[in-house]
Amino acid sequence: MTILVAPDKFKGTLTAAEAAEAIADGLAGLGLPVVRMPVADGGDGTVDAVAAAGFARRTATVTGPAGGPVAASYAVRGTTAVIELAEASGLRRLPGGRPCPLTATTRGTGELVDAALRGGATRIVLGLGGSATTDGGAGLAAALGARFRDAAGNPLPPGGAALRDLADLDLGAVRARLRGAEIVVATDVDNPLLGPDGAAAVFGPQKGATPGDVAVLEAGLARLAALAPDPAAARRPGAGAAGGAGFAALAFLGATVRPGIDYLLDLIGFAEKLADATVVITGEGSLDHQSLRGKAPYGVARAAARAGVPVVALAGRSELGAAEARQAGFAAVRTLTSLVPPGAGDPLAWIVANGPAQMLRALAASIARDLPGGPW
Image (cartoon, rainbow, N blue to C red):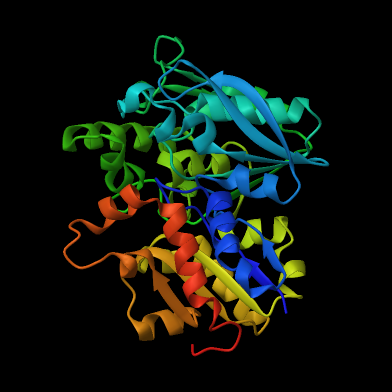
């Protein structure tokens, strides 16, 4: 019997690798083989997950979302490079955490792609999530040679607001730069670029955009789509990912879109590890209805179900009822909030104060006696 431990991050408290370590420590008393395999769905932690699976980590100094330099990581194995947009252009890269929704740029992500290409990569896996940007991926494309100019022929400044003045788009250099390269977008987001379900309306407020800012960004993205070689790409699922970076990947880089967790599980060899597993333990910070739209634990549960392996989810908290959890493929769901004593006040604050890793170890230890057979 082997227990496969494959959690995503517990956002804001534990990385996926830290969560896997805590769970494995909690199961240590069983005396059974435990295999750690941190996972990700294309967002924060994607590079960490593939690095844990044997990819080599590389670091480059690139342009951050606010324009200053940041040291960002990507991962390489053979001629495949995995690039996480959040590493270069994510919310965590904002100086002092101060949002700049109208001017934030994805240029650093494009610089990471360029670095990987210069290093010999011919397949770029681009994980989209956790971005601080709503520039339609213009910065990403510009770093690879695309030119965005206003009516006077001047280069546009960075950010989504400037796209309202876009008059000319030249993609010749970017197409030459990517000749012979395959670009794969890994994302769990299926939003289009524009409209009430689009990048600006849905995700802009999460990046500090006011209602007025959202209108400005929407106008800029609409202008970008209108001048693109394939305006219909704006309607494709995933075009709205990472503030419209999905659109740039589709329309300018010739990318294909794959569900993030499914593609990344293939990339890290999850099926091979699953073949020897009797039980899989997955998890994330918040198991909710958004989790069922392609987040990592749901992808793990689906993959395990195809192999007939039961899955237990450990989460910080869960909004899923027992029937919903079973339908999603979880034999059981256990939460850190269940360990919070009555009258302790805010559960999240109590968990953070008492050590999320320590609590996750305790939660894993509490289910150890029920493995592998139940009582799920």
